[in-house]
Length: 292
Image 1: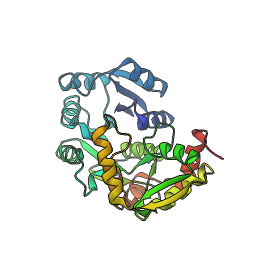
Image 2: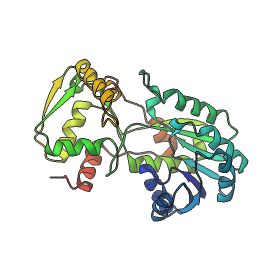
Image 3: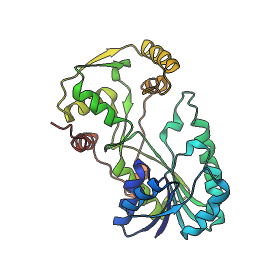
């Protein structure tokens, strides 16, 4: 299969491109810079100059790729989806897989939530044979924006406040497992016109997630439950004075929501079989050089 990939130079992109290559697929990856082109080339894809911000030039770039299948890993939260769908249609692409996020199910007033929901609606109304994947929090290797930072903190911190006590459910997905789901969706006609949640094998409490993460780096960090509201208020003050806050109040508020999802559809239709969180976080700790 000849696949056009957008977002191929990102964290998930490298895993998808390498998995596609191992399955014998020929990948062309959109690249907006020489640095991005070098990244996708190392992952085994042929780079194609193109920029999602250039809606006018996108159709020409997609047509030049000569692909029948699109795998869109670029975020749906930046408003590019209408241009991507239009360019795919004009280029004669018939099959398309789009990666969204389970964050669209939040009850919080997240700025990009409606943008992503509108993007999903545009995909579903298109003539493309589409599949939408909604992964949970992605982890598993250096460069993830979530648990790699947690592991680094646990490696050195004697004490860690846990807002809300850690009772709510989490279900992170390993990046390599998500890549297999992406390729499974692209390859299987049964996945057409379906939306799948893609998560770890089972939910666990945030407290259990912390315990397993600490074990992965042989941490003796003491976890101290603290009320959520004061922590959120403190972070909102921090956001007002910081140009680039390292953590936001919204992230803490999300800890008050259960993030547990059924993967039955992905398992039956895509052959999806994710690894346990204990296995995945231990491997990430080793990759970061933080394992016991």
